[in-house]
Length: 330
Image 1 (cartoon, rainbow, N blue to C red):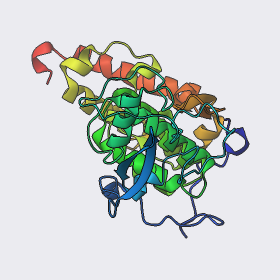
Image 2 (cartoon, rainbow, N blue to C red):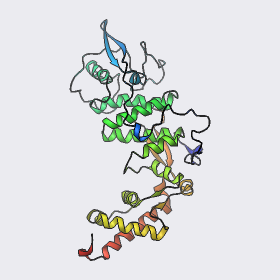
Image 3 (cartoon, rainbow, N blue to C red):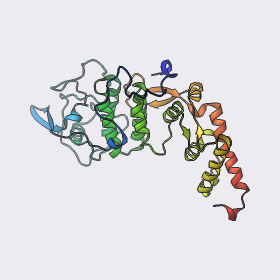
Image 4 (cartoon, rainbow, N blue to C red):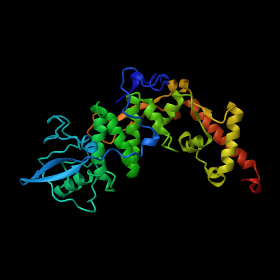
């Protein structure tokens, strides 16, 4: 899914008047303070799952139930025949067994249809409280559906986004965190909801992604010394000896070089850099049934000036520390 048609405008600063014209404001701000806020869990909703003429009931909270994709049954919200490979689709006609604890681990690319009866029951039971720890394969099945909703269900995408924030707080699998980071980035950019993206990147700490760099360039935000040090491997700087042995001195020396070169303690990223940066595939979706699983965004670190500037400053910092007698180094 390329974004060539609006790359030139995608990161422009939004009007100070707030929500972009033509879009509805969010139900409530999705700022960093609300990422940890639990979604409403009352009252519980129920759906019936038939097995050998026996009704099995799972009490799934309405905010979770509303984000599930059903191909049949009383909660059907998907037209049979479409998206046949969608891995999160729930069919009430498939048999279920008994929930198993601990949950049997799932392999790569799980789907609801391919689960065994007991695994389906385990998954449905987990949906009653998605904050409970479980094998990450079950989380991915639910998450696949959230990605689908982000892209194909315009009335629910913000609810899906909020649920992804919630899942990220309790399920810390590195693959899940990477994919969900990309999904959050992609949907905020596609929807041009830079307010949500700005709130989100404040929670990412030391994570420096291509999307975050592009956002910073579009908003005239600079790279700090710590940002530059984190980016060192990506601009060709491989000698991390003094970064590891003398981190405080390395950062202080780099700070001085920044101020000397740019009269500021930050390296300037500008909209001009954003416009000139080549496109790179910066965001990937996990849902393997999506027709387009990648979104192209400007690759700031492949801008020749940025790459050279950062590399040169790191080399200068390294050589400056090298000249200091060992006993005088911090």
